[in-house]
Image 1 (cartoon, rainbow over the protein chains, first blue to last red):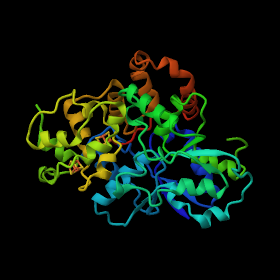
Image 2: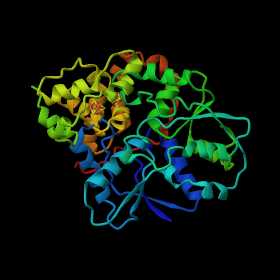
Image 3: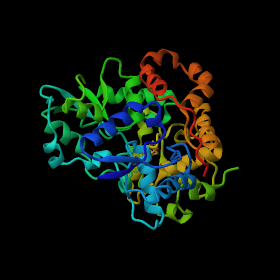
Image 4: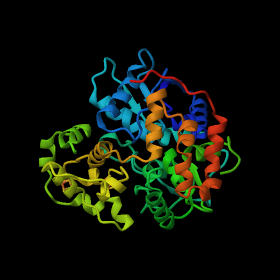
Length: 229
Length: 157
Ligand code: SF4
Ligand code: SF4
């Protein structure tokens, strides 16, 4: 199936490994990601209100004849696109999807498993934007837990899964991010699994020896495309 | 000078929307800023805005709100307080050098061009004690270097 693809700024730079791995997984699943031509930054969390939805509205407009299902892996881009899609009447009906929303039991069962996750402990960490506010949240709020347990991994971190790591203040007030991330790290065990490039950066920065990985790393490991986690 | 209506509009609200606030303070009870052991009360901020009172740069939420939307999801009216805080920050020009660099980059190229942002904010980064995190930042620096490209000039909206 063909999808329109909105990588966003981080996936073109500091999170380029996430971009590469998302593309790889979609490829392995037999899907095509067609990058939206000449997309603009969605404004992330820096721009205020109106301008923010205007930026994403224009990005959706640029799709024109492309597929009307839009994949956005970065949670901030996903939220902004979803807000814009809700606020404006486009000629075509678009759907904004996060890669996590593609996964269900059936899809997981169809994957060729090379390594399982037996004996490994994980804290799936969603952060804020994938789960809140409700109108833009992902459909299944336990999908990462379901993926991990499907491949026999163990789960910890129920207390922290939806708490805030403060990543949005990382470059404005580092003390905030440091304190919040350390709290989450103290209250959880095992490998931290994230999908958000900002959460990845915040957690990694203050995690000392704890491993912080993207869910895409875990999936590619399970599928045998990566040798280590 | 604070422009209450402008700030509320930026957040996609109307002033009347804030009048539904019940004063229940559920937002305050879940606010992430409390985890920093700093007292924050989103309800008070909304009330001050509604009454047209000034909220200044030192307000704990203007300084520390993390845009986590915990308040919104707990609020019976789903009031988007972090959007209002973002409008306030813009109005009070509280952005850090880094945030200004991001906005500048978007204004020039239509996208955040990270090499520019990091160069522009390098002094700030060094001053803010980032040097000791450099080792852990290497993964991101390598990602930037690997994907280095000339800035992609996108027509500014
Ligand atoms: S979004 Fe801001 S005001 Fe709301 S709970 Fe989070 S830190 Fe507090
Ligand atoms: S939770 Fe909502 S209704 Fe209650 S005080 Fe906070 S903003 Fe007002």
